Amino acid sequence: MNIRQAKEQIKYAMKAYFSKDEYGNYLLPTEKQRPVFLLGAPGIGKTAIIEQIAQELDVAFVSYSMTHHTRQSALGLPFIAHKTYEGAEFEVSEYTMSEIIASVYDMMESTGKHEGILFLDEINCVSETLTPAMLQFLQYKVFGRHRVPEGWIVVTAGNPPEYNRTVHDFDIATWDRLKRVDVEPDYDAWHAYAVATQVHPSIISYLEIERDHFYHVETTIDGVSFVTARSWDDLSSMIKLSEQHGLPVNDLLIGQYIQDAGIAKRFAVYYDLFTKYRSDYQVDQILQGQADAALADRVRRAGFDERVSLVGMLSDALCSQLRDTMLREGGIACVHRDLADIKEAQGEDVADIADEIEERASTLSAQLKRDKQAGLLTSENYAAWEFAIDFYTRILQDREAGAPVGFDRAREAFEQEVAALSDSVDDAKRSLANAFSFADEAFANGQEMVVLVTDLAANKHALAFIDEHGSDEYFAHSAQLDFNVRESDLAARIGMLDLDAPGAPESSNEG
Picture 1 (cartoon, rainbow, N blue to C red):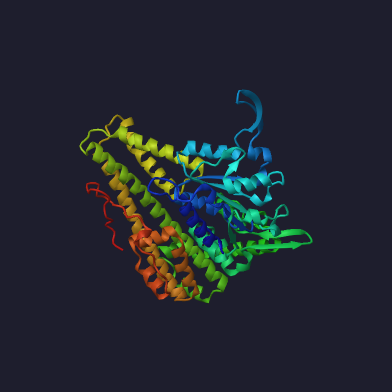
Picture 2 (cartoon, rainbow, N blue to C red):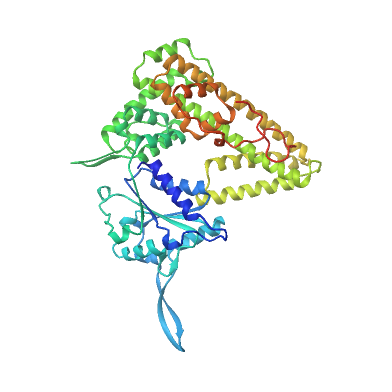
């Protein structure tokens, strides 16, 4: 199966393992909760999807690579304990708590979450002295004398032996204690992830042209040449930072990530072409509806790589704009909930709500810091909480100037943010309309239009925006191309202005 299917299967297992009866007891006993074993080639995103599952299920996450552990660090260190049995004293060997088990308790203390996923990577590379203890752990969730706390699910991962010379083959007894999930590299699955996370458009468009370069491992007389999904993902981050700081992106940089000389050279040449196309086409002018009339004609006559590059640039620019708008909307929703709670508790005529606002800002800051340290902070929560904290900080400046912070002041500032959001929504809808208008003229209903619609559908923020605020152009093209648009549960509906309305207000936007 591909990485997306593997994520679904593992998430289903986690939901089943976390399920409880009416008395709060887990329906599946610990010894029946087979640890998941995710077996797949290196660099395809095994760790990433487990972390995503933990975030989506709102549970804690602890990750360890077992190649770093000896028998002592995994089981704990031995010490002599003095015990009395039937009136006689004895010296007994015991073990300190395993570093791994202790880290689970540390995570519970720091996050307040008592359910989580313990992820052990490279589990089929443990030393021979640790193998018997690992077999016991896989069945009983015990290292030494210490058990993984109830409510923590064990997920493991490893590479097939052809990718790692230190891999040990499991025997039947071990396999019979695992829930095995085999995963293979798959470009289409990665493409959806890449669009959703806004991997650099040069990489996405290059791999649309050279799909067999997505994942490549080859042994030559000079050693192993390889390219993995992780290679492209990490290279994307470095390209973005290099462009931001005006640093060169050349074959020297690319070769540090794409460790296949031929593919690295091909991509370096393509990247140079991509930057030329980006300069020539001025995507921002297309989205503003100001593209030169001759531009669409040039696209119609352009080669395949140039057309694919333009689609990648359009998709990236649109998804970025729609993402920013939806994250801003999430921040406004966060502020709206807080102000509605303050109004319900204090009333809107209270002279000063500065203390309440300061408390909200402090609570959000602590939650942001805690979740960030624990690796549980999603991009949506990060953006919403940072927006709210900044909003509250600006309001509290009135108190620093000696003025009271009444509810009317908070309402006024909130209305200004809503007005700015409304402008952002209008701008984004115009960008969508202009992009499709240009694409109609340049591509008609060709393959490039399919890619553009597919990319928008693959990006959760873009699709949430379209579902919330509408786009006649997107719906028309997705219908023509037989795309199924998901229902309205994709986007959380929030009120724009009506702080007086009881409960969660309805959106006033028309699609």
